[in-house]
Length: 288
DNA sequence: AAGGTTACCTGCCCGC
DNA sequence: TGCGGGCAGGTAACCT
Image 1 (cartoon, rainbow, N blue to C red):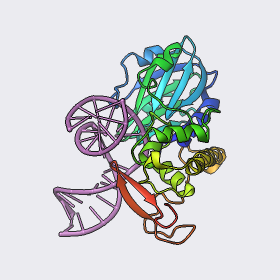
Image 2 (cartoon, rainbow, N blue to C red):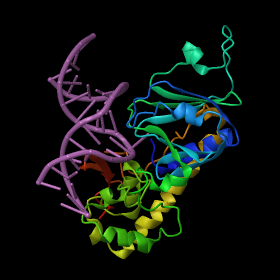
Image 3 (tube, protein in one colour):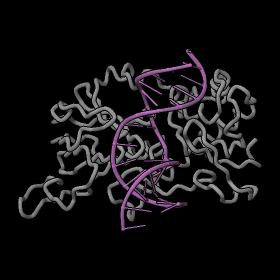
Image 4 (cartoon, chains in turn green, cyan, brown):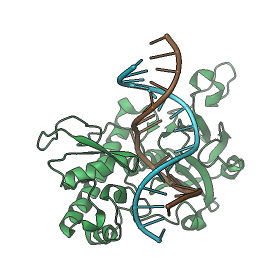
């Protein structure tokens, strides 16, 4: 479920568990992803200390010493799982997770073992994600990042700025909100949620929006993303959910996935339409 | 160059 | 029960 809040939650969950620890071993279990995992990634990462874990758009950046950053993207179905503790196999006395066949999971692509024995697994059913590396000093020039739009949580992301962005695009507001070359982090779920709260119909053409409407979209973009990050943070602290899987928490949506259910404001049935191959959820009475 | 479509991949759910 | 179609939270290579 990785949009900005989920990726942020993964980063916040991961950092305290690996920061200042050294990567002891990296094992490629299945390199087949959108960009294949580079063969030399294990040797590059091995013996490097983790300096920080950061988010950039929907990417996870594991910043390492020696000018190295490991870049992870979760695609549609990527997951990061951190073993809670070392689990040695009784028979072999091996601490490798993968020496215990019962713990093996389908679609695990990468295993990282830290110096304290904790193990990080990248799992991705649909293989749309990626795990690569680059020089930290050249991060912003990387092909993946060179065309990214503005981050929502920077001071320059103002209502005025957003309105200017909208004014340059002659297509639906829904697809503009989801366009990472304009604004990063908003995917199909939060685009519907933001437009519902702002009372703007998803098919409205972006450059037709009034400044007042852009201001509402700006306000709810920040509010909704913040609330979702907060919810993710709560789930990280919840011991009942502390199964090692990071970034997956119960969402409460107002519009997304509520097709046929009553609008929480006016009780009109939530409708769906297809836009650019993606389903949009909206209330035809509230959203104009 | 903007805007739209298609493909990548697996699994699940639904209707027949 | 089995099969086919459509669908799923993302991105980028294509085409016009």
